[in-house]
Image (cartoon, rainbow over all chains, first blue to last red):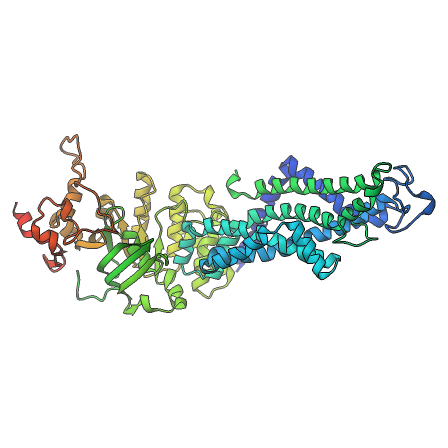
Length: 293
Length: 328
């Protein structure tokens, strides 16, 4: 009985070490670390926004309008005298929430579709033709039409973005499933009596997860840009919310004289997507078990 | 072969075809053989003779499409495997009949602990707790001479021979009655081959299993098999005990196989290969499948298919002229 207990402990410790290996390799990768640090700053900044600024994001200070960055207003103020630093911080909440929620659901549905199409080949052509249709639509046009049909608000924009992000996931997962499925270890698993569900869960999914995780970061980047674009044309988050794309749109009119109103939220978008891309690259390297030394 | 004993696994008149873009590949054409308890049958043939297809059929794993098991029976302890429902087939795979694949490099999941791959087989078939399964998987690892401390390593951390031993442990984890080994040593180098074969023989004795050994290596056969069946173009052309085949060779194809082995006692500069190539299985010759390559072929050989004839109680051969060939 005593022996059993020690083996139990062993399992837990050793299983933790798999994840630790990935984390260790990620930590060694300078570019990935830069990405992680940038993202952490953005995430913490938006979570602790109330502590980092004394102004509300919609608070108008009439005498302070059109101010350039100063000690009083770190990033200046806009045409209504709203503090841009506060708006950028609070805006991070919108951006990150939209990016992760959309990507999460797109990854979930896309992976499911991809696995079903790749594993059960009978459904392949039907599912892939549907995916092709959605892939053939320009994302911007699709987003605008869905939002125009359902009404311009954040929820509808997120629905549109999710739908248009699914095909990419489905394609990647399907391609990966096709290569994994024909390998001998799948046949070996079948030869010991594993069911389809078991093969998918234990053998296919772990082997296709690396590209899914990488695509997750790339899709988040794309979602940030698309949601900013849709908000920019008024098809997404509505004023007075401090969404970054919306802020660019609002500052557009004053670009010649007060560049900071439009440019600074753009810099925020750029920094966030840069961090996400760096993390994506690093994850791709860290997750490949064949690179393990 | 022995008639007094009930075979563990019996294959009757198995026909497997692949339908590929308009052409029909006749991979297996009416193969019959029996496996007896504790005995090893060697299935010998060239690449493309239908050995692997036969092995996959035994587990009902022929990829469908394009493969179809057209007719025949596979009887495991009297039950026809081909008519079992899917759920029972899954119980049968791994628990009753297990298989070792050719290439150990690709028959392990690269992102799963080797130990867990052995444990999986136990979890599927036996209703045991996680820890008991873990414990048994560790013992299984030890029995193929891999320290159980390496349970949590990944396949890429193992050498080829060790991977093949893991694959063997995986197949034997639920102590199946029949083990199918599809060229288990082909991908290994010769010294490791001997180790792996030794180990397989030991384990088979220990578990009283029957084995179907698929190979094209006559040396492996001589070392491990009790019975031998020679397969050519999807048909068994000669079968018998190992003595029957090695000392009393009848079929010209088998004779050709033995002649193509180099003789250590006499200096030869060229090996005696059988002239010609294996026929294309989507366009098989008429009559005896071997006649275009056979130096003893007569007109009868090219029109009529030879019957299976008994040379002795254990030895059968399918050739019109085997008596004449012997006299020469």
